[in-house]
Length: 298
Image 1: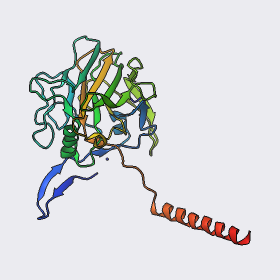
Image 2: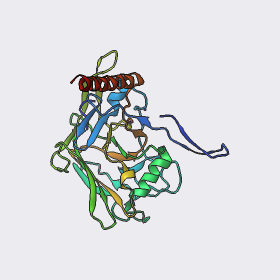
Image 3: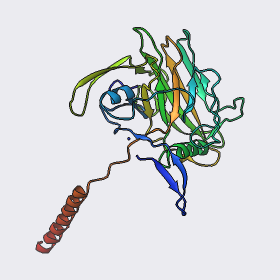
Image 4: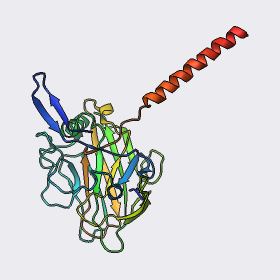
């Protein structure tokens, strides 16, 4: 979790001009650099409450079941992932039951096994189709929303996790680690601190220092986490499946919740401004002129 620490509605039109579907417009995250985000191995973590306190729109989000997101784990009883998203027909395994009432640890792998409605394992192609149908064709990277529920003076907790992709033969062909050791390998004992509060200086005017509280069960989004290289379109081969393994410790109150979403998306790669490109062109031309001149006078 982060210690420190938006594109338009997409309409798909037919050739006759009729609107076929409308996807939810994702919020484009700030660049994954300090102080907006903190890196934890393959992932970047944003404090939603901190971004909101800095005046960035779209981060004062109410969480809960029954929305467009996929539930990975929740304490709400009787919840499922049937007909998930803006387009009907996307069924995923039931969420894992997050503990409450004094259970201090939680772990569980979501995705690889069948649940009562028979919707596992999860095909990469199905997950990618869900993201694109619900949040637009640019939504190739799953994003994880954390809503924590701690209490008292010990509102801090620890988190680690991993996402794995397996081929049709069940071999792991790609993985992304969320832990406190940046080595591209899942280290389950290298816990990431989810702090009870964060104090940070606004990187934009008025450059004021703010303090936000996290993990308090406010029903509002606490943290946004994603791995920039987890582009599912690169792994969309027949038979490939995806699974999610997140773990927590030092839990002291009601159940934590984790959602998979496309409602937030990474900012697209920056492109040089036209003026910068023109200067680069002038520089290249000058260098070529100097090379020709040197050859001529040699």
